[in-house]
Structures are given as C-alpha cells and as structure tokens.
Length: 255
Length: 128
Image (cartoon, rainbow over all chains, first blue to last red; front, side):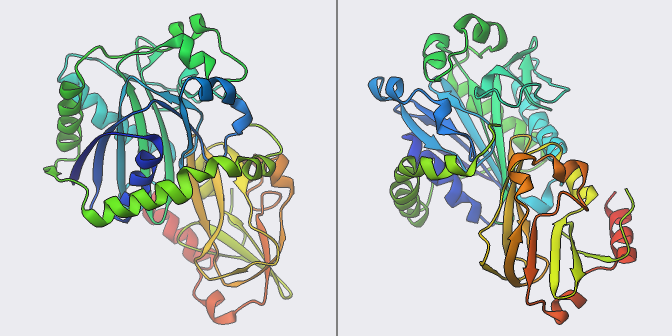
C-alpha cells in the first residue's frame, strides 16, 4: 500500500489529486490538508444549499467532490483518502465503511481515543450538512460525529475520503449554509480531536498498516501525477463551479 | 426476492430483459441490497450509444456514488424518468419499476455472454 502525504493544497488540487490516484495500481492511503479553507459538496448535492455570498466574502473556496454525501467545511482537519480496487472490498457499501472505519479506530486507539461506529443510517436525507448526522459505520466519540466521510466506486476503484476534525468553528460552519443550522446544535453533535496533526497522521498510518496487515510505502506524487492533477484542477474542479446550474437542473428532489 | 427466469445477468449484478428488439436494464435485488437506500440516479441521455460494460448510469446511496454498467451495447431509446422523483423504486422494485434504461439494436453474441438465472443464482451463492 502506498502512503502519500501531500500536505496543504487548495480544494481544486486536493480533489484532483484524489481523482488522479484512481489510476494507481496499488492501494493508496493519502493524507492531506486544505489551504485556503473550502467547502466541498457531494457529487449530486444542490449548490443552492450553500451560502455563496458568505463563502465569497470569507474567501472560502467551493468544490464539488466526485464522492456522494453532503457538504463539509474543510478547515481544521486532517483529511484521508483511501483508494483500492473495488474487487478487494465488499460490494456492500455499509460493510466497506465498516472496514475503513475499523482501520481508523485501530489507529486512533494508539492515541488513547475510543471511537465508535454509528449503528444506524442517516434519519434526515435532506440535511445538507455532512457533519450534522452520522451515517452507518461512520465514527463518533460519545455519540458526537468526529469524522465525515464519503465514497465513490468509479473506474473500477473504491475511493473513500474523510475529514478528521482537529477543531471546529461552528459559527463559520453554520454560516456556509443557506439554511443555517444552529451553531449550538452543531456543537452538540460534532466533536474534534485536539492532537497535533503529525501525531494524528502517524496514528492513521499505523491503523491502516496494522488493520490491512501490510507495510506502507511512503512516496510523493510523481511528476506526471502532479501535472495531471494541476490540469484537472483547472479544467474540471475550478471551472465546475460554473456548471452547477446544469447539475442542479438534474435534480428534481433534494437529497 | 426470486430472480425471474426470463432475465439474464452480469457479474456486476445488472439484469437485462429482452422484449422483441428492446432490452430493458436494471440492477438486481442483491445489488440494491448492497447499495442500501438509493437517493439519486443520474440517468444517461436518450439516443446515446453505449458499449458493452460501458458506464450506463450512476447511482448515489449512503454517501457513495457507484457506476452501473451496460450488459450489452446498443442505443439508449428510453430512460426511466420515474427514478428522477422516486429513486427509491430501485430498492423497492429493482426488477420492475426500478428499471433504468431501454436499449435497442441488440447484439445476440453479447447476450450469450451473460448469465442465465440458474448461473446467476449459483454465482450469488458463491459470493454470499
């Protein structure tokens, strides 16, 4: 399994790198962060869920993910992505979440943290805020959501990425949405890990290595991956904002 | 749910039913169960040509988006517009109201490569 730490990048590059890594021949665990902070929305999420004026004034980029799910403000977090041949994972989406969550639980246990897997599905499928409700086998601490995750099964691969919160500004998080969730409600339902990101990275690496019983081959992106990601970032992810209307018109009901 | 004998199946758990020169395609009960609640189906454009095993449509369920593949090549003559408002039909009636597209210009040789009900049931037993 390859391990790639791409550090801080903007939203467009971050999402493009994940897409480029779908071509990897071996499983990849990537860890990364976001600079500037950004809101990512699900592949089919309605852009109308987002307060574009607020995001623009606050220099928050907006990017559409290739994965499902709802919107996340990426600010104080460590993000992971895991890419593997879909044939190597269960076909059941819930089961595959369980496997990846188990690797993370194992890693974070080394930091003395006891994460739990949520045992039921999202109750309100119309809720545009990813972190407001845990889904099947997503991770919580004391019933509060700590990692928001989303998946895609495309090009023969399974890609899952997830945001491990290392802090949260609930007012800012709430402000990103057109229908603003109460900051107090977010505080009640979300938690974070106040641990230096370096330690967190090491724990995640250890969790995947130990759970999948494999060594991790740490490498950087190669030049071709990087140049392909830069191209995708510019021609797809950055410009895709403009075609949101087209995406929205596909939708006749909100998720 | 029993898999009907008049259908053919793929290893990716799509089904196909032939009525004259039209083939109807959907996903099996097993496939919908693995996806859990379907919340959105991105349907292709009518008139589009599709290759065998090409991406037919995309289904979103439990925060995952998954490609659905075409069992055979052909021209998409109709898509199930009911799924735009009722994607849950894929879960509730995978073999009937949850169908996804209709194709024409059916290639018999490609059909022969697909599994019969008996073969598919055996295939399912192998993976369960």
